[in-house]
Length: 485
Image (cartoon, rainbow, N blue to C red; front, side, top):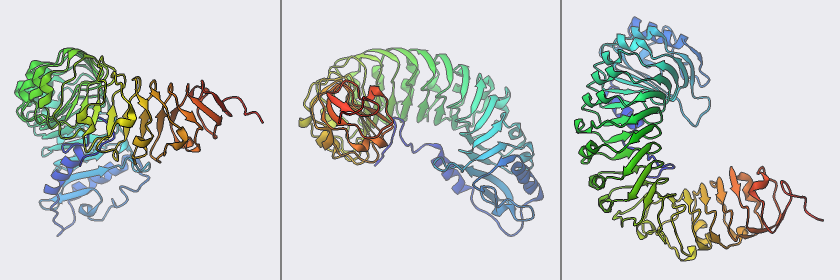
C-alpha cells in the first residue's frame, strides 16, 4: 500500500531506488590490498575542500588507511575506487557537508558513479572534473548549492547513463549539446533556476525513462517531440511558465507513462481525450493552468490512477464516472464543477489519504457520508461548499490527519467534541455554525481559523492573530479583549 503526503507520490523510479539498484551491482569489493595511491590522493583532496562536516560523514577518510574501507566508498577491479556515495539525511539537521568539490577528484580515474545526495551546502560551479573521468556513467549531485550555468559542451559526457542535478541553483539556458547525451536513461534537472525554452534536442535522447525539468523558469510551448521516446515512464514539467496546448505527440507515451505532471504552468485549451488511453498512469497533475471545457469521458479508462489533480482550472460539468479500484489523492478544487455529493468512487476507496474538493458545488449532510476508509486521511479540504451536519464522526476516525479545511459551509457541531490528533497542524472551519469552546490542543497547530462561528468562552494561550477568532459570539482573552470577571 502506498501512502504519500503530497500530490507527487513516492515513486518506484525515484532516485534512492535507482541508486540502490546501481550500487548493488557495483558493491563487489576486493580487499587484498590497499587502494591505489591516486585514489587516496583524489579522495583526500575532496575532503580538504569540505570546511564543515558536523556529523563526521568523512571521519573515516584518513591518510594511510585503505580508502576502500572508507565510508561511502566502493572499490572494484584491482582495488580501484569506482563509486562515491555520500548522503545527507533530511530529517537530521547536522547531516550535511559544507564546501566545494575539489578538481583533484579527477585523480580517481576509475569512478563510474558519483552520488552526492542531500548534502545541502556543497557550492561552486558545475564540476568540470567530470569531463576527465572516462568511465563515469552515473552522476547524482542533488539538493545542494551548485550554481551558475551548465557548460555549453556538456554533451561531451557522452558515456553518461544518468544525470541528476536536481535541487541546486543552476541558471541560464539548458545547453543544446545536452541532446548529445544519447545514452541517458534519466535526465533530472528539476528544482533549479533554468530559464529559456524547453530544449527540443532532447528528442535525440531516445532511451529516457525519466525526464524532469520541473520547478524552473522555462517558458514557451512544450515541443511536440515525444514520439521519440519509447520507454518514458516519468515526465515532470510542472512549476514552469509553459504555455499553449498539451502536444499531441504525448499520446505516443500512453503504453508506459506512469507519471505525467504538468501542473502550475500556463497551459490552455481542453484536456485531450486521448489521455484516457494512458492505462498505466499512476499520477496526473494538470493543476493551476487554464484548461477549459469538460473532463473527457475517456477518463473512466484510467483504472490504475492513484493521484489526480485537476484543481485551479476552468473545467465544467459533468465530471465523468471513474472506474478506479482506489484513489490515494484527489483534488478537483476551484473549477466550475457542481458535484452535489462526494463521488461514490471516492467514498469506496480503501486507501485514500488526500481529498480536496473545495468549491465543487457539494450539497450534502456530512453525517450521511460513510467512507470505506478514514484511517489514512492526511488532508481534507471541503471549503466553500454547502455542506451541513458535523465532521466529528469522520475526523474522530482519523489517526494521521495533518490538515482539515471546511471554511464557508454550514457545519454545525461542538468543537469541544472533536478529537484532535497529534499530527493535526492546520484547521480552518471559519464561516460555519460551530459552537462550544476552543480546546487547549490548538496550541500545537501551525495555522488556525475558527472565525465567524458561534464559539464562546476564554481562549487558551495561543500564538494566533485576532483574525483567527474574530466574529464569534463571546470569545475572550488574548489576542481578543480580556474576559470579564
